[in-house]
Structures are given as structure tokens and as C-alpha cells.
Image (cartoon, rainbow, N blue to C red):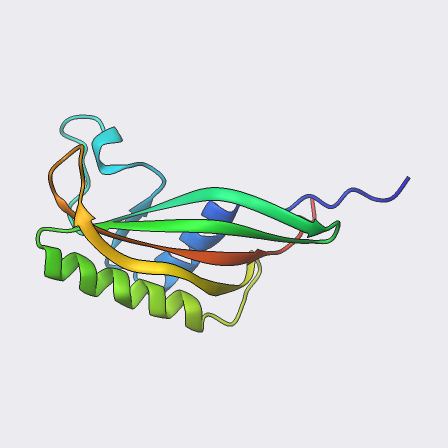
Length: 132
């Protein structure tokens, strides 16, 4: 039997990159409306979500990662999302993610649950195998 090759969580890897590049912004894996009342983070807030992992060969995997930015204004949210998108595309790889490729966005819209401005984009994360 061949050795199993599990991969790292694309959300955790992307969060580590974004938090290192933008320590002044709060990032997490919850939607803005999922935070308990009184515990909602200060805006801007960036949510990181995995929309699927794809294994084409046994030892390589990519994941679609969606980043959503909620901000006080449409312009502020778009600007931050555009910066995050550019930073991820320029990232040359590290211990969790081997890099990111373009997919969609940034796309500005209004959050249907909160009515706040939000902008989102998706990238393709090249995942590293887990070593544990």
C-alpha cells in the first residue's frame, strides 16, 4: 500500500498568510452575522472560507479559497479586498501554502444578511502535504 498524503487546511494556511501581511485587520472563519451579539469584530473584518479541495494527483492538491471583506463603506471594503487579493497573488509560498493563483474578483456587493458593504474574491491555493 502506498503512503497516504493528507493536506493542510486551506483556511488555516490562508489565514496565517493574511494575518502576517495585515496584522492591523481582524481575520477569521466566521461570516459577520455568525458572531455572537456584542462580540462582532471591529470593521474591517476578513472572512476566509474553503469552497473545495481538488486532488488531481495523489501528491498535489489545490483549494478554492474565498476571502470576504466587510467594511464601513463600499470603497474601503473594495480597497482592502483588492490589496489582499494582490498580496496573495504575490505570495511566493511558505510552510502551509505553496502559493496562490487567480480565480475571481474582487467583486463588491451588499451582504444580504447584514446589509453591510462587502467585497469578495477567490484564489486557488496550492496546498502543502501535512507532515504529522
